[in-house]
Image 1 (tube, rainbow, N blue to C red):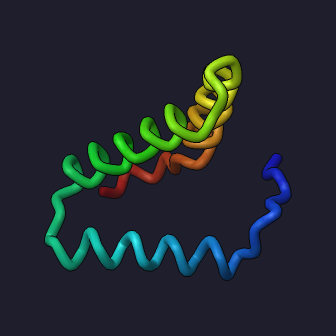
Image 2 (tube, helix red, strand yellow):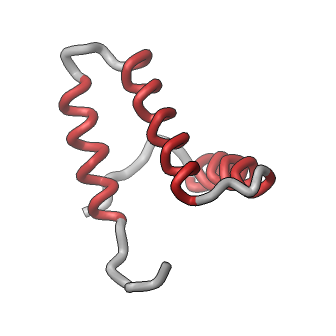
Length: 75
């Protein structure tokens, strides 16, 4: 079940659009995009989340990512 967010859909979409535009502007291949985004997530967790809370945040993030992946065979 999706969680309610304290952020509006508009805020999320605006940031997502900005990030996608940067990756597209640089003709970033998928593997490099995933690497950079993964590094960004790691950096955010390591610099903005208390060490004791990190494992729970990572588990929650992984579960949300897995739940959002479609099984449509397209790529």
